[in-house]
Length: 86
Image (tube, rainbow, N blue to C red; front, side, top):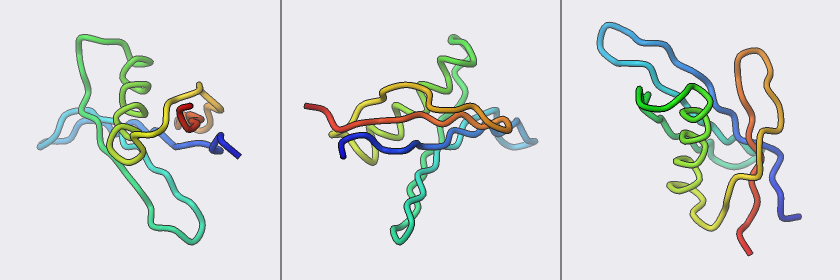
């Protein structure tokens, strides 16, 4: 199988010490949880920030992979699917 189920992208609002950001998590049963935090880029849209966060996660943890699209938006979280590059 070359396509994964999904990675979760969750918005984290600003605090007194940090600005807005997105947290990306990939949890696979029986394996360590991988995560990546993407700082908000005010020069691009909300949707572009979500996609940049997912792409940043793959660049860091799975550079041999690429995004294939949004699998699901549920309860404020966005789930992106990915696959291995050919």
